[in-house]
Image (cartoon, rainbow, N blue to C red; front, side):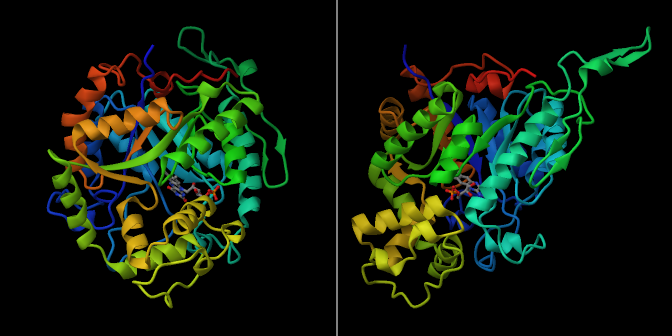
Length: 437
Ligand SMILES: Cc1cc2nc3c(=O)[nH]c(=O)nc-3n(C[C@H](O)[C@H](O)[C@H](O)COP(=O)(O)O)c2cc1C
């Protein structure tokens, strides 16, 4: 049988290209208007996507003077969006470093109840130094320390979601029995970072637990994903590294005692689409012409934990020696590996590197016709690189509209994408088991 792909819409700013917010095709709505997110979710649902996804950072970017980087808090936004959609999955980002497991377990269980089983948590450990400073943490917790804490956080959160039996809620007005209390259990967790008695103060949600999504791709991040993640976002600039990642992560999932199909791998993909390849390239070039190199330089610095790149000339070929060793980076480690890997292979100038990263921050950028975009996706799907895609339209809503109108029908015709929803929960769309208590 033909393998079918999963599609997630990653909603970010007015599109994933750094300059999208200024583009005439971008939405006229302010990024604080919930209607913007509701409209995109409804479009994605009409296009039969599995899910939408909101990322999050816990600090204001220092490039905001010239870059559209402000947004609404994800869980509240997704809750509002859940009321105007009925099928599409809702993936929200929340940091395991800067919240308590009890709060988070409750919020996502609530979202799962409110949306009738469509909630997912994108687990992040927060790589940004600026975020640490907003949470009384002047010395950012180290890369490995953040993952150690996240592991214990997950143990507690899963325990809380499982603390109610599926049939514990009785709500029997005749007998006066509200809850079968023998099916509700404390978790009595005492660990290195958390001490949580439990149980959760609400019944088990439709999916049992929200779907767990994760996006760390470093060595530590991969092991963490293998233990916990049911969907994995990842960034690649070439097919070879995407394939290496896919095979490596599936092997780690199996080694962790799980089935390989219970962890979907969704690489980021940002296509500019037009009637001819030349028009699509022109669209991308027009966007690149709107970028601000100093915004790019600041973003690059943030990825490397604040490393200063201000001395580097814009038009001289770069060398890996211009960057710190990714193994020493305490911030977004795997993304720094992607960037230094590209510099090693291609020796771009700083200006060219920043243009590539402006496209989608280190995810795969592409320009082509609908047929070419479908061919690309089919190749990655069939050559062990992806179970689907984290679609990152360069301009929203325009490039989403074009994708749904022009690319989705081709994928459907080839048997690569659903022609109707067959389930109602995100677990059903992603074909994930419902965890038992
Ligand atoms: C598609 C994608 C989305 C991400 N979204 C967020 C996010 O919203 N917030 C965040 O702090 N980190 C986000 N990250 C970063 C990862 O969670 C992780 O911190 C980063 O990849 C560094 O982890 P690593 O060092 O294990 O690779 C995202 C990464 C990817 C690939």
